[in-house]
Image (cartoon, rainbow, N blue to C red):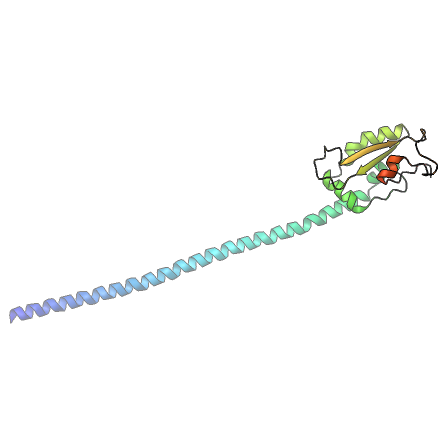
Length: 186
C-alpha cells in the first residue's frame, strides 16, 4: 500500500504541476492577446498621427496654393496700373493699341517679374530718339525659351520714309500683316 500511496502522491503532484502549467499557458495566451491589442493600438495611433501630420501639411500646402495666384494677380494688376508701365510702354506704342490682359499675363509669366521692360528698354529708347515707333509683336503660341526670336519680334516703322500707302491710312505691309494698329499720323 505504501507503493499505492506513493503513486497517488506522485499523481497529485503531476496534477498540481499540470494545473500550474495550464494556468501559465492561459496567462501566456491572455498576455499574447493583450500584447496583440497593444501593438494594434500603437499602430493605429502611429497611423492617425501620420495622417494628422499629413492632413496638417496638406491644409498648409492648399492654403499656400490658394494665396499664390492671388499674390500674382495683385502683382500683375499693380504693375499694369503703375506709372512705370504707362511711362515705358504707352509713349512708345501706337496711341490706339489695346493690350489685352491675357497677353500681358503671358508676357509677365514668360519674362518673370516684368523684365521685358529691362530687356527692351535700350531698344525702345533708341527707336524713340530716332523718331521711330517701337512695335513689340507677341506670339502667344510660342512655348520655346525666351531666346527664340519667334516669341517676341521688335519692328520699327519709319514715319519719314513714306512706306505706307494713302489707301492703307499710312500702315506698312508688315503692320497690316501682323494686324498691329500703329497709326502715328492720327
